[in-house]
Amino acid sequence: MIKLNRRKALALMGGTAAATALAAPAIAANRKIKVGALRFTSHSGSFVAVERDYFTEAGLDAELVFFQAAQPMAVAIASGDINYAVTAISGGLISLAQKGAVKVIGGALAEEEGIDGQQILVSDAAFQAGIDHPSKLGGKSYGVTQTGSSFHYVGSQIAKAEGIEMSFKPLQKVGAVIGALKSGQIDAWNIVPHIAKPLAGSGAVHIVGAVQDYIPNYQVTTVFTSAKNAADERAMTESFLAGFSRGVDDYNGAMIDQSGGEAGVNEMVDLIHKYVYTDRPREKAAPSIINGTMRLNQNAALNLASVRDQLDWFKSEGLVDSAVTMETLVDPSYVETIG
Image (cartoon, rainbow, N blue to C red):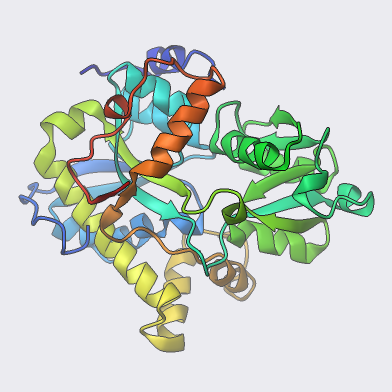
């Protein structure tokens, strides 16, 4: 197992593009940890665990550290700048796992039938030109953050299913992709519903399909840490998963199951708004937060079949070394696994 500084972690990427059901963790004696996150509703498990002191009760002093894309979080885990994170599988993460720097230890967000998931968007210019279905994206441009990002994987699966070819435009940050789509500099993109629906409502872009129609049961994001933490810091890692999963349970209960009724939804929206759409007043942020609700994985359960499919794609595209195995990428000992 190795610990990398930020420069070395970037180099290794090679330019590629537990609720209470968890075992009771050993009290971690108020250990300080940093948790990576994006300002997405899908990261609400971490937000709730911080706000409701679930990490504290698990013996951890947790600080949230925010990023604007998935791959920089993988670098930060490898370099030791953060301890745990929730993010999508990317080429950079896989390459760092091959070097013994990171491990996937659980699942966070997954597509689920019957719940609106990631949406496929096209620019208004593309829509006015007749592109009203993903099958019509042949020869068009598709926005991604980085080559080898989850957006690249999703776009490629759509293209494969439709028998078309698209060009992928790496724009580094989600905000840059949004700007390019709204201005017609790219033709299409996919994103979680709390971003997709407001964009479509503005008329600047249009929803033309759903990701779950192309990748059912897709494990959108995973929980990961350094390989050293996974191997040598079991008590701390179990404590993190326990606190995180309590946050997930509260989020699912309030927003999906609505066990607390309207009052419970409103309370959860207030909490999430501290981290998501902070530049908007609450009344304008609330519809987007509510519309973006997707179920998070209970007890951080991980869909191994989906992760395996993603790994196979990255290898088939030459974005990661063909020698990488699931054992290299995933430590399945912490949570329930599927497939």
